[in-house]
Image 1 (tube, rainbow, N blue to C red):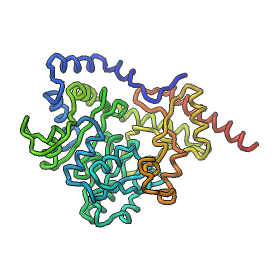
Image 2: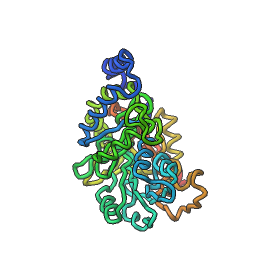
Image 3: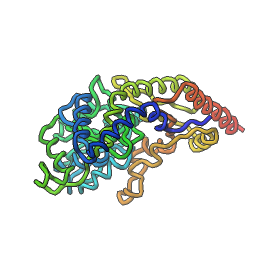
Image 4: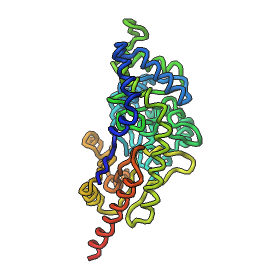
Amino acid sequence: MNVPFVDLETQYDRLRPEIDDAIQCVIDDTAFVRGPYVSDFEEEYADAYGVDHCIGVANGTDAIYIVLRMLGIGPGDEVITVANSWISTSETIGQTGAKPVFVDIEPDYYNIAVDQIAEKITEDTKAIIPVHLFGQAAEIDAVMEIASAHDLYVIEDTAQAHFAEYDGQHVGTFGIAGTFSFYPGKNLGAYGDAGAIVTNHDELARRCRMFSDHGASEKHDHEIEGINSRLDGIQAAVLSAKLPHILEWNRRRNENARQYTELLRDVPGITPPPVRPNASHVFHLYVIRVDEGRDDLQDFLENRGISTSIHYPKALPFLKAYEHRNHKPSEFPVAHDYQDRILSLPMYPEMNEEMIKYVASSIRKWTEQFYTKERR
């Protein structure tokens, strides 16, 4: 059996008439950049998310950068974020001229270790960017308390956690802004790069929209120097066609995760991902922890037709991009340890029980062979 890591083709086949019609309408109306399809999606997403403003942008990376810039963050400032994330989270801080300051991760839920944030705050700190990694909500109420006590902005990186909740509230709505990626493989994915910013702050929304469109509030009326980061009509139309299905897709991901966890619960050396008690998990990724032999397990699964991935092979402080910072493993012991132990299994709404059982039984088979070999 072959089990792909993600199966976008099957999703498209199930939505083919809706997707094809959405794309054809954009072509017929030649509404390729901004325009009514973008406005419609922005309104739909804001309504679904329960916020006042949604600003469509070119990608999730730009979404973070735009918010940082429009909050006035720049050279001489520091922004605290988590050690284990995709580089978009930290590189956008550096692109403003500010300095990313990393915090280790909590051992169970893989999100920012909230109890270590305060010690990283200095007089130059201006913001905190928690990441709701893998679809799991970070401990955002505690982050907000720290930010409030120190008068800091909170920008939520929600690229992997569309519609996840913390205490019944959507993540991305706690801080001054939430940023989203709609990269094709995300829970809500476009057919190319796409992203968005959500906020209830009227002036920030106005400035983000202006900055993303060459600094213009109206065509040819450029108030500031901006950038070109506009959501295009085709991507917006595709997202509008998919949006009504996202909650059901998230439900299916949770059901898949429940089956995985039940089947892997007693497998030696394998730790399934727990769910934070007061939060929901939308399982953009299903990430197990392997006590030893992670790479050997990945090869074993690949040979059995099961595609996996590692998110991420190196924690941010240990990337070449940050080697000038001379970070040591002792500064981020959990993130450093987990980079050699985490493994992302196939996860998407269209998976069936047979696939999940095949992946789980393959992992069990590997552990039996691996530990037998180790004992020799």
